[in-house]
Length: 173
Image (tube, rainbow, N blue to C red; front, side, top):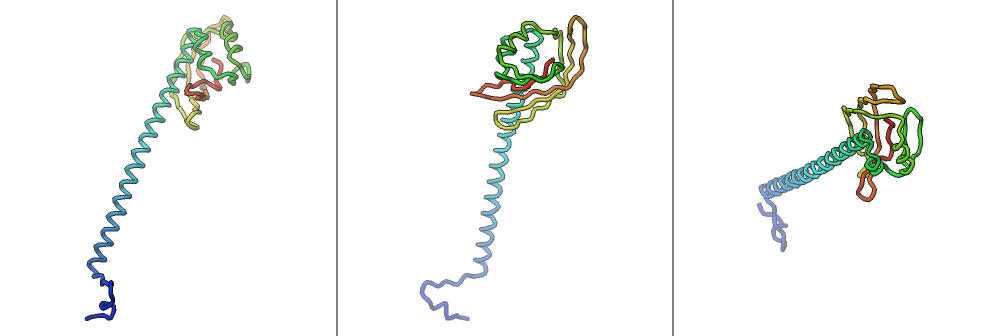
């Protein structure tokens, strides 16, 4: 069974076995690339997850440092961890506070924080340089001479500028 095409120069008949081999080769190549891309995506995703978890731990550590600074009345640390012109919310209302005003407020506080405990903390990254942290807080404090035991829910916003995180919004204790 010869065909007229067989006589044409450069013509080569493909046997069905060859077509089948080419198809199998194409499938194998597709699966190899699919698996390779999936592996690359997975490892990249794991790197992103690890980076996010690392930043979340950093934010929680900074939040803890801030509360410890309030407890210890460590004005310098609290000011260092606060963004200039941060937003402060609490029983006194809402205000925009620059670092010098915060420093003055902390030097003559209306309360004394004796102890605190942060629980059930959640960090949400809103971008590479913006995070919010929300948590339950138990505060043992004295306000205007009266001992107060406070259970509250609080949230702070953190902003990274020039590689350093600072609280851009935070609650009053």
